[in-house]
Length: 497
View 1 (cartoon, one colour):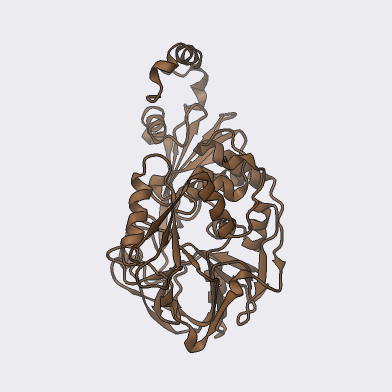
View 2: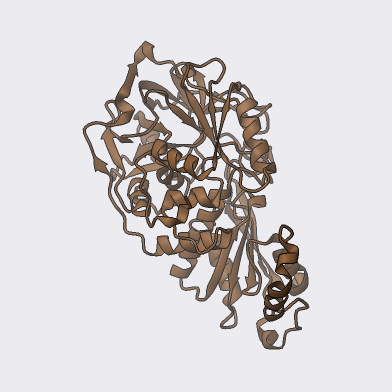
């Protein structure tokens, strides 16, 4: 079965999705590993070194946890699995086709509000108070220098704005402190962080639900820059073409995914913090505060809901390239959609490179139409909602350059961009607590952050507009000759080309 044969996703939850992945041959089940460095380490090695498509890894019979409790890594790290998640029809199973299909889906997106239901699979087991023990789950220690085990790395943190009632889902890491409390690391500027700050400013507790093992489309939505005021539930429903089913959380009254694998409900109390981390982050560094734990708000867990034989979904951030393929694709599609909506014409492609952790090195390909077109594309791409978070380098290239091919992009920079005139530097832009280029002395803590900025470079690697029509010819086999040669000699090079 090929992923792109069906026009829309027909799975109900993570388990239905996994059945489809297994039938496609992209799921590997690994039995007998340890939660302590083994699961995450194997996931990192497979992600980086797999020949061909890296499979999703489902760890079973994990040491130290009940029989049947499992952990899933590399969930969305292939074109096929992302196409399945979003019901994409792909002409070719490559990065560019996937980005174009995602961009088309975004352009036609119609939000679908979540559907409240009375019962859901997540209600199969329920614990409260002293019955709660988060260590019954296969919480991984991800990296050798990490300060603890993590419940939340591929999950949704569900919060609500105290003024408007807007429900937001974001992916904010959650380290386990003890059986019934976890940390909540939220960078300044994130929607959930703003909601938390509003509650704390009023000396009110901040109610939170954390859902693990959700519909993959909902998890993907929670990692993206969905517009303020729009719930990721409605966004994910629009991506799938059907509403996400939710229940009312018994403690928080927040909508929680009805068919999630695990959900915790609780609250953060103003002023209560505990030492969290360190944790190796997505850019490939311990960049929050090095190896020094920092104080973070505590989620005091009141309720625990989980399915029989639950699956803990996990992400393994590490030195790129690695686990961030789906984020590269979807963030590229969102930047493409946003810059077109801002009035930039003739965008031919966008790619947020794996080497930049899907955020730090972004490329936009255009067909130049007028003087200043390339600078307009670069400036807007660097500051739009999906590109503004760090987004250190934005490169604009002509439409003969494949934006996903780093060698092509570097060639364009080296041969078409004069450094004096081609590079624009924008100062005092939005940074992150995970920014590895910012001195630890300037960051403060997550609970009490300093004002941290980064600069951005917009590199115009297009042919100069003034003489683009007289540009020097490129030395390469023409498409026509390539077609002729392969028609005649293709069989000779099977297995090589």
